[in-house]
Structures are given as structure tokens and as C-alpha cells.
Image (cartoon, rainbow, N blue to C red; front, top):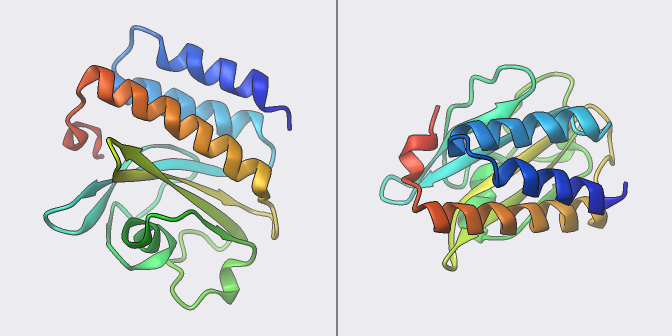
Length: 162
């Protein structure tokens, strides 16, 4: 996986004149369609006062998990710890929320704006051991680009909730 063309494509998407919701949706579609082991790509955004995550734009099969409490599942753990979680085998996790019987591994990378964890990008794969440090590095770079766009546009995160 060569990160340069992916980052270039992401920058082009984020610099377009579309709404931030459309940009994030297209970004999800791009990653899901262009990286073979990314079978579901989506964002969750934090409601800090209620300690919940809210589903934002995504690409892949529909999910029932539109609101996730902090601490619940991999996404909820990332909301509490501010750390990336890379799960090689979701069946081995006690605190995993099953989204699909097809999901075998997951990576969740926090998204920070001004040092605050405002959400995350969540990627599911139908392959065990699908993610590596290269995925984490790529997704961290993508989140940095998104963070800059969210700051520049002064986006109300609630506007991104589905």
C-alpha cells in the first residue's frame, strides 16, 4: 500500500467545495473502494457531555450502531483512552460490539482537534490480522488532514451525526 497517492486523493476530496459531510462520505467511499482489506469505513463523533459517540458518514454495509457509549466496544474504548486500537481478531475481544458476522479485524484511530479527541475513524475488515502499523500511520495522517479541515471550517460536530 503506497500512502502517497492515497493522501493526495484525500487532500483533493477535503479541498473540494462540497459540504464537510459529503467530503467525509467520499473519503470513506474512496478508502473502502481502493484499499482491499477496508470493508467498512466510517466516522464516529463524540458528544462529550453525554459521553456518547454518534455515527457519521460511512461506506459499507449499514450498521445498527448509531450511538455508542464511551467505554463500550473498540470505538468506545478509543473515546476513553485516546489511543488507537488495532484488533487482529475481534472474536478474541471481550468488549467487542459485533457489527457484522463478516468482520474479523478492526482498527480505530482517534481524531483530535486542538488536542481534544472529537471522534475517530473506524475500519472493519473481513480478514483476520488485516491491519498493520502502515494502516495506523496512514489513518493518523488522514485524521490530521481532517482535523485541519474541521478547524478551518469551524464545523459543528453535531451536523455530522447520522
